[in-house]
Length: 337
Ligand SMILES: NC(=O)c1ccc[n+]([C@@H]2O[C@H](COP(=O)([O-])OP(=O)(O)OC[C@H]3O[C@@H](n4cnc5c(N)ncnc54)[C@H](OP(=O)(O)O)[C@@H]3O)[C@@H](O)[C@H]2O)c1
Image (cartoon, rainbow, N blue to C red; front, side, top):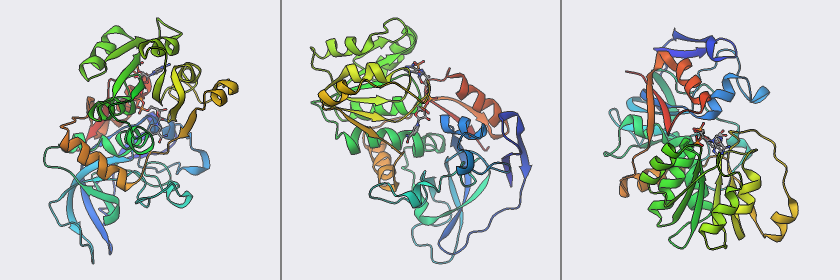
């Protein structure tokens, strides 16, 4: 089988290689991968950003894949050859709260990922894809959609009475917008350009704020809620946004701390957090149960993942550079042909 292998750190050191076909052991399924999606974390992994917590030379990147089962190992009960499946982000985290043992077992980081034609998974680490969804669409879900779901639904229990603020046009932000709208909530989206704000409006955001033109967008968001503030901020930009996110949040509101596209460290005005009774909640993707809920929510509400662009597997380096550029609107993917 063909696989993209990181020979040394850096996107220019990715090589398409011929590797032996894997075979499924007991309880495992062999999947012919058809598509995979990229996340900002893959850019970090190619830079060695996870240090000793990641495999270095020889890593097969990417965590999110979809394909069809071609063979099952002894004792497999849930799947048969021909089933369409998508993998979970943390193969061992099935349900319940985060657990250190399972969080260290991530694909495309500690373990080889899905930028390859064939991969073996535990039958517990894949789920069926609804008939309405393509391989490409399903491959966008394991990291970005599960993270957004965890923030918007699992932790914030968002409903029609709530206002949610999303940041930018990345994968997590767009899923958060779609899930919040499907739950009946009002969405305020911030973005860098008028054109992107218009597209966010087409996806259902009722209000848009250009954060480049309005540095005090937190106050603007508060005004849009008649001074009350938003119930949930889906914080994906990090250093550049946290201060305004705190301003935007209502008394007792929640900031779901997810990402750091603009940098990893931020100064926090502690009295505003304390006196605002804010809940700052870290999110580490999510478990298999969350992915099951995401798959059901997408099928029931006809939610279509927003795909910016798809590259052939051999062009993974170019795909990673595209994600690094921040020019994408939605998910960037690769297809195995
Ligand atoms: N904790 C977790 O479990 C978890 C899971 C998934 C991802 N993440 C993290 O979450 C972040 C987002 O991931 P992603 O894959 O969705 O990212 P992405 O696709 O790379 O998102 C990039 C987008 O961020 C927006 N952006 C950049 N600077 C901004 C700023 N100052 N204010 C507001 N928006 C800004 C831009 O949109 P506009 O041009 O529209 O502004 C840009 O298109 C990353 O840091 C990622 O590592 C964390």
